[in-house]
Length: 442
Image (cartoon, rainbow, N blue to C red):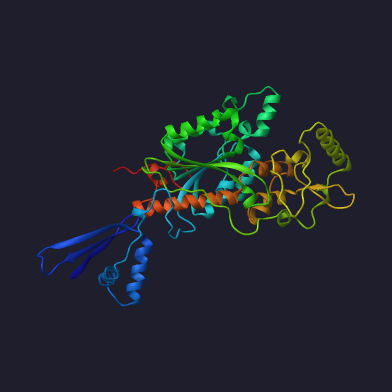
């Protein structure tokens, strides 16, 4: 048998390898065309043939000959079950683009950039969060998303959005009901912002949606709110995956949030092999891991405030209510850090021994409790009050990263099976900063 490699030609996302087969007894050639071979395979071929002093033809044929002689049973992605992620080595990072909506202080961004993502656009209306975002990532997010035209948003692979949760949160609903205010989609100022996302999704068709909200989203208004959201995403043509994840497996804080990951059916005609991450193995993080050794005395509660919180808790306990302060142990985990923590710190109080009143967490400890990297912990540029609000409203970066890695598995699977990734911002008439660029005339 005489094999001949006719050539290897570069393409945009890989290479094409053409192998010609000529049988001595048959006066004709057969060609095997393999399109979009991943660059890492081509690099490996070049390295191996150089090491063994072989031509490309000789090396490729030797590999094929060995496979034939061994009668290998190949396990290819093509034959893998669509319900299970293909167990193949997945890169720790993969180049993709994303936008960061309702960005807060960039909990999504800090994680997605670790995974190889490049942020093309961000939006956050709060001026103090914008200040922190600028200090941490180098650019200031656009303001009110309702004033942003979808055409001004560049094409992107992943839309990341922790859309406002107060109208759907247990605390937010209780407060609004007590004040006679609307909540959920009836809330004009916040609830309808989900539909602003819908408008952007319709216009931009991001292949992947990565959304986050409070656990109560699924039960709010007897499940009708979640039904509306789910049906809206389905009508847009997306596969939907969702799961409530407790961040306590990643940080020393009980914090349940629902994560929603969606894939565009136009890019993924078959249901993609996405799975949410399993809980990490090993010892769980403890509160002692994030505490500062010598916190400023200003974070100690005044005797007056401490006495008030104790009387308040005793009064509610007598009525059979569960309201009260949260005096934690360093050997355990804390309650959920909320945006109201700046008021009295009552949900997470650190005992200090003796008759000394407990203290609240410092802003730096809150950054640690949420799982932000040290470079962010040491770069707090707003007041303590604003910092408490920002961390209480943030997503947990370590959870985002864990879910993001599962998204990378699907993108890697897409590359292996389809030979292409998703959208590139350059095809939308924008540069990397989201600014429109003029297309050259043909």
